[in-house]
Length: 213
Image (cartoon, rainbow, N blue to C red; front, side):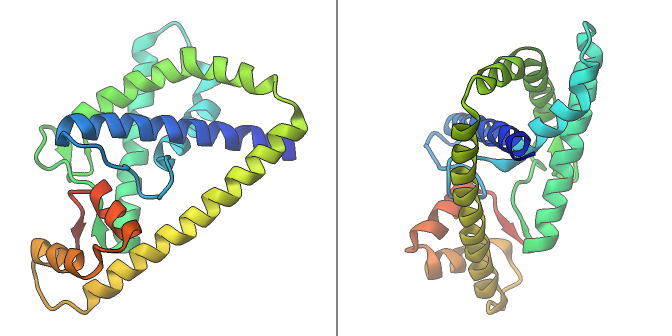
């Protein structure tokens, strides 16, 4: 059981890191600057890791030679995960972390067609080519070493999550003391109050379209 959990947690971390790399490249092209993209401090985007693990468990037994079917199913799953994550984070933190309202064919600004096409294609690559090779490589690692590495990474990931949630709480605390009914004004005041703090600065830079509710 411990080996099984370690195996899939490492898969989760690998795909979270690869997702972070993808976000870094996308944001670098879009904003022409490098930002440590992601909700957490470390180099990983958990939404990619969760999406990858869900698709591995649900779709690996059904991967066929029909690429259209695989693409559609993967796109639908990614859409559900991204929309659900956006909605949940907005309700928890009272902030809008990403907004695709300026893009064509979007749903409430939470998901858009362009992203779903890209995620569908990436998911096909994941299931058909990437994941089989990564799993084959992980199997070759000594069990004790794998469990040790997974435990260390889990502790780091847990601490990162706690610290990041604390940062968001500080942002929300500042926001509650602001009597301005304007997203941009709130953002400016928040920046002026807590921007010198490096962790908060990184988080705001990572989500330049962050909107407080």
